[in-house]
Length: 285
Image (cartoon, rainbow, N blue to C red; front, side, top):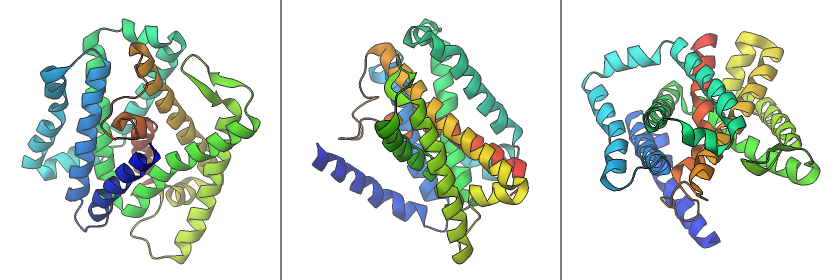
């Protein structure tokens, strides 16, 4: 299993790194679109679709991207500039989690299939577009956002393993604890400080999300944003666990051998990305 995980990770990096550091944003956007399409297929399968219907559902993403490619300037202006849409999407994420997760997997399963499938398209499309826009801002900005989730996961694991006592959401993810969440906040806070110190010494292509928040909102603003993004990442993780538990699935799929599915790898990013784009818009580009 470990060997398979390593091979899959290396294969993904072999594709990701060249697309990430090319001058044009298009190769990375295409890579992100492929992942988002895979995630949409998994969402369809987790919500009662299979075979051709699941693939037709997932195909909505590349089809919409192709339409946007016909009018790239208009698409960028429409979806890239306003922060209100990203802010409302973040609010929708929080409200959905607060309303549905206390009901457990059964609450999600009781929703009309059309609502669940429609939500999936919004989530996966906005994830792809937020990744595209973030890469358009700069590699440093994009990586700082993604590292919030990675650092949060690592810090939460070690803090929860060492000090975890109080369960966060035992019906959805028995391993998560409040102590783990506190550790995640401290870990990402430390990451933010180190990142800002490092980028002062290096020539980066853009400001990180940490430096932008510090510049426009100060230290208290940075603490608030870091804590909020960590909390959103936790909600995204728990939300995906709810989807899987509603159908008794361990992984979202087997698309990434040794790692599960796309949703298993990006679950925490799903709400963090739109929130980060809202922060970017509020703080100015």
